[in-house]
View (cartoon, rainbow, N blue to C red):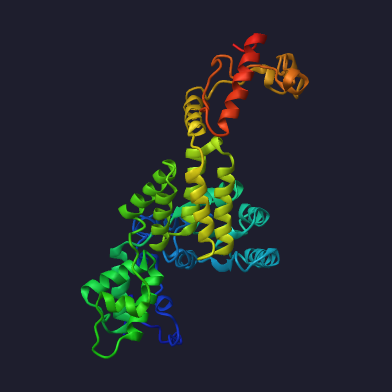
Length: 442
């Protein structure tokens, strides 16, 4: 008899025990083609499918929410490429465990077999631990696949990222969750005891997490009496949780984060707290909100209150340390601080202006007087000639021009006369006055 995926059991192999195994584990896909919700990676024309067909599998970072198939896909990749599969978690592993894994991989390689090393929660390794992967990646001892729910650009070393391709796993949509539930019903040999509305609520409760959807389905089957069918209210009573107020990947999510950001920008702490609370209550990832608060600190407050960035970052770290619900108070404190801080987008505007200038004048060399001259030839070309060391000048200010000669002096940063930037404005005006008096610059 064929199993759920249409495969005939092998009579020469003992049947795999299913008693006590969670439904999500029993329904793990057997091939990449069976993975749902990640067709851009595992479909017929997906990125991973193409890599397998090419016969070349490099190191990768799988970035995406929980329950989207990162671990399963890594296992399937090892199986479909004939690589030995080794799995560790950054939460439970240290330097000693890494050394053992690397030594085992080296031994396999001497025997002609390469290792696919899957590292869950790789962002939790510190910088030194992340750097330890570089030699074994470079010499081909392992093909590294790291899984993370956090933005790799912020959480992983640049050296590691330069050697690995980042592939994004998407939150499962309603259609994908529906496919999983159909598979679960086929495996159980019975339909979920839910009416149409309750079934839709269960899919919302899963919140894009395939594993969660199957766990919820198991809860429903355990709770149902013979012949009982739950409505939406009955379902929520059984599973003891509310459906999210909004879909984190759709308009509700973007509407509320926009409302939170604009309330902070508009210096309304009460409205800002309201939207923060709504998003937390709806099940939003608190670390996502922490990152957004950091963004608000640098975009809308900037140098008007330099402490804003420190406090926002500290709140994100505090939540990471305390977890829910204790850490949510740190996010609320940062939210109020940002909303009540003086506002300035001067650095944000200056940076955008500098980026435009960099793209327009990116080929220009800095002026020779501020370049070092480590060789004789460079000294003969007047590199470093005429440079004045600011600490040796009156007021520790030489007033030299540092822009490329063909570009001329530019002004990007224009601080307003409020908050801490009032003091910065005084300094800039003072230096401009000295520069003019000394006739420096172009």
